[in-house]
Image 1 (tube, rainbow, N blue to C red):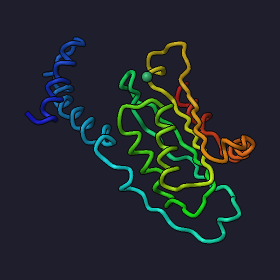
Image 2 (image 1 turned 30 degrees about the horizontal axis):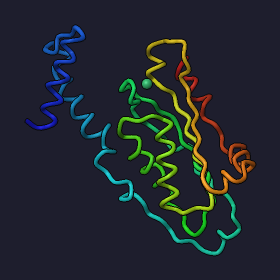
Image 3 (image 1 turned 90 degrees about the vertical axis):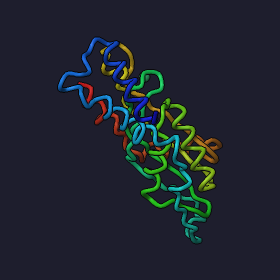
Image 4 (image 1 turned 135 degrees about the vertical axis):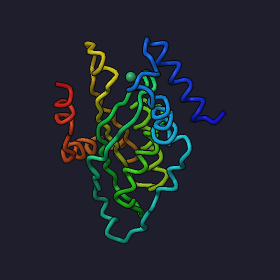
Amino acid sequence: MSKEKELEELVRRFLIIIGENPDREGLKETPKRVARMWLNELTLGYRVNPKDYVKVFEVDEYLRYGDMVIVQDVPVRSMCEHHLLPFFGYAHIAYIPNDKVLGFSKFARIIEVYSKKLQLQERLTQEVADFLVETLNPKGLLLMIEAIHTCALIRGVEEPMFMITLASRGVFREKPELINEALSIIKSKLADLKKLST
Ligand code: ZN
């Protein structure tokens, strides 16, 4: 049996166990749809190599000044491994290049690859930071992810729904004042995310 078919059967079974009738009109196509979504979209990260999305530019002498590059508002959409429910928000990257920069849109692709599997926001942040350091060999890098966790939102529990995670590498670890500098430039999107929960 194909993986898709197998997953389809499981979803059908799941619907029965929670008390549904998988043969009713609205649910007829659901097992197929859910199986396809999980295999083709939500878990793409298990089968794709983020290196395929890297386009690095060797850069010129202007970078020797050691100034910061900030890439803001990169969408993050992932699935929480504890509940199999989405968490989503934004990533912001600050880095000080050595001799390489990354094509602007590639940040989004790399984050997408690491997001499209079962994740923890904490791990996602560290994994993406490590990959970017390996790829760009920057003097320093700071990655901030802010996200709303629908597992908390949907259950209406009295627990935090928003999480901010940081990963710092290189000079950002050696000089914490650089973190403050980066965070004073980065515009948090938390207020936007909070609107979604009220
Ligand atoms: Zn969760």
